[in-house]
Amino acid sequence: MVSEAPPFWWSKADWRAWTLYPISFLYGRISGYRMTHAKRVSVAVPVICVGNFTVGGAGKTPTALTIARAAKARGLKPGFLSRGYSGSLDVTTVVDPEHHRAVAVGDEPLLLAREALTVISRRRVEGAERLVKEGADLIIMDDGFQSARIAIDYALLVIDASRGLGNGHIVPGGPVRAPIRLQLRYATALVKVGSGVAADKIVRIAARAAKPYFTASLKVCDGADLAGRSVLAFAGIADPSKFFRTVESLGAHIAASRSFGDHEHLADDEIDDIISTAERDNLQIVTTSKDFVRLAGHHGKAEQLAGKCRVIEVEMAFEDHLAPKLIIDRAIDACRERRLKEKKV
Image (tube, rainbow, N blue to C red):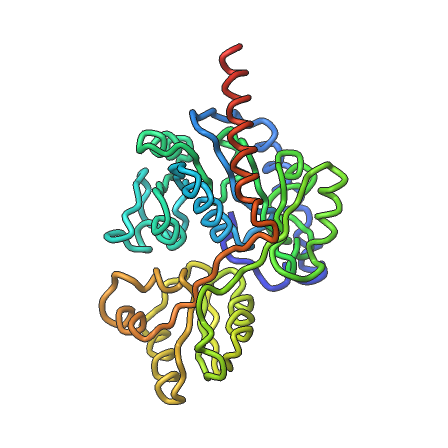
C-alpha cells in the first residue's frame, strides 16, 4: 500500500492520474478480487473495523478511540488491533506504552495503547486471537478494512468532508484503495468528519445503497491559552494542513510551520531547525499527539524537542452522542447472528 499521498491526488484528475489509469485499473481489479474472494476468519468476539476509502488519514484513530471509550463506559474490555505501520516489529506484540517506542510498534498503536489493550500484528487473524486471549470482549480494528482477513461485524468507513475521495482514482493515480461501489458493499456505515462538501457525493451514493452515515468533528481537548500567541506548528501526518487549521481555530498565530511525511521520524537537522527557529522568534512549538509519541522515549535531539512541545490533543465528537453506543450494539448483535449461523453449519 502506498504510504504517502502526492498532492495531485487531492485535486481534479489531471494528466498524471489519467497516465496512471491503466495501472490504477489493474490495482483496482486485484484489490477488488481480494475483497470479494477472501476467506474471512471468524473470531469469538464482536469486531468493529474503523477504516476509510482512501490512503491517508481521515480520522480513523480518533474515531477508534471514541468507540473504545464508549465500550469501556458500558463495562466492556475493548482491544485495538493494528498492523503497527511504520514500526519495526514483525511479531505479534501487546503494546506497552510505558516501554515501547514508536520506532518499534508504530505511532498510532502507542496512542491507542494509552486508552486500551492494543495488539500489533502483520497477521491480523493472529493479532485478533491474541486480543481474545488477553481478555478483550470487543475488537476494534484501526484500519484493515480492505485486507478482508477477518469477519467484520461492523465496518465504519471514515471520510474527511474537506478532502473526500480526492480525484476519485484508484492507487497509484489517486488515493482510493479499491473500487468504491465494492467497498460500499462491505461497509456498514460511514462517518463524515468536519465541514465541507467534498464527501457529499459519496454520502449520497451510500444513502442510495441504504448505508447510514454519521457526522462528526475533531474537537480540541485543551488549548484556549494559545489564543493570541505566536507559534511554530509542525506535523508529520497525512494532512498537516488540517492540524494547522486546528491551531488557527484556537486563535493562535502560526508564525512558522513545518510539514513532514506521515509517520516520519525527524532527523537531527530538522529538529535543530524547529528549535532554533522557535528560539530566535520567541515562538511556542506546537504539534500533534501522533508526532509527540514519535519523539517520546528517545534521547538527544528528540528528547530536547519533546521537552519544548505543546501537544494539541483532539478527540472525535459525533454529532449524535449516542452514535458510538449504537455502533457497539449493532456489532454485538451482528456477532451473535454470525456465531449462531456458524453453529448451524
